[in-house]
Length: 239
Image 1 (cartoon, rainbow, N blue to C red):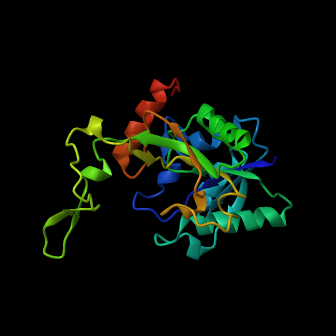
Image 2 (image 1 turned 90 degrees about the vertical axis):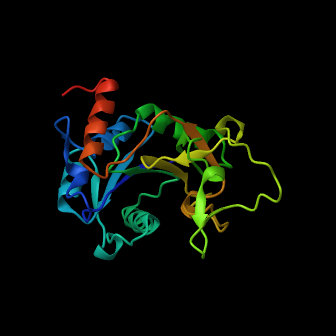
């Protein structure tokens, strides 16, 4: 079974050069890149970007460069299209993965053990389409969320049909939020499947095995950089 890592990141961001900003003396993308590099199950490593700084920083971590077309690096571009493009480049090089670990360059909250658990999940259950980290999120439960009606007032997202929904979060069904650090795909059952996957990340398919983690966030501003450094130090990284 061929297992490949694909690090993804674009250069056109609100926080300039965020994917290569220094975090404990290393570019941000170094941490997800090296977490995957330390997994012996993964044999090939690629980076997809439109940005030379990202491509070069990832190359220093041992990742092969895939230059992403400009149209796939716009803020409106869909992540799945960059993944499909990268898989096409891999195929041209004779690399056709069965399992693809998609790493996001703007999140350092990644552990080798999480990646290995996701791979193990897919190898042990061939019916799965993907496996990825999730957060248990009860405070912002969808049952508690509101939409805006045409008249400007709030309304529920769901038709509860006379159900009495508890205001106590512990009484609600468990609510999980996908992390934006990495997603591990069984390509046959996800991206290459004819069966539509779950919205909005349809490329992950329908049978997604969660890995519940305590914390995960990606970088959008300078405060997130400081939060990332704090997390890394708590995990034993040193400056």
